Amino acid sequence: MLTNRGECYSRVGDVTQDDLDVDQVLDRIESGESQAEIAESLGVSPPTLCRWLKSDESTAKRSAQAREESAEAWLDKGLGVLSKALYKDAGMDAGAARAYAQECARRAAIRNPKYSEKMAIGGAEGLPPIKTEMSLTEATRQIAFALAQSARKTEAKE
Image (cartoon, rainbow, N blue to C red; front, side):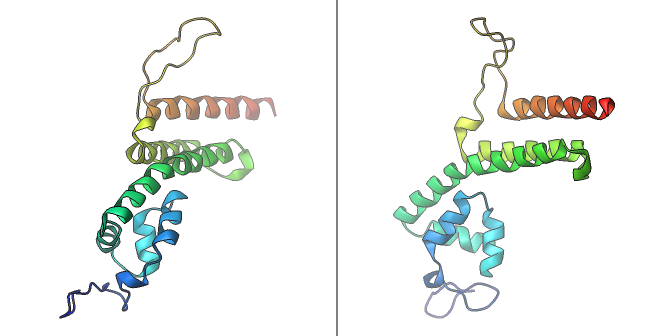
């Protein structure tokens, strides 16, 4: 909501842009927290937070850099869930873990274009790759499938 002086207030409480600790918000973005989660914790709407992060050129550049840097954190989240899904006692559905990892990979690719490039996969050392083009999402899918197969083989042996 805008006051008669043009100051921007959130819908919840009396949080203003001046109350925003930009460095803390950028650290949270970089660590993989979504802007929606951050906005909710601050008591503002996501569009308000986005507008504040674009309020001046310097903050906008720093915000873009933080989003780009967050790609690695998103990949780590997905791989962490896949790793946990390998253990039978974790009680995780392998399909759900794979879907979560794929979503994390998608979010990483949105935040940093280098994670959406095609890459060479497979092949023995010194030989050409088996498959020369694969998206990050497809690579994540392949890894999740291999991990699930490995977990099934381990369970079968026990």
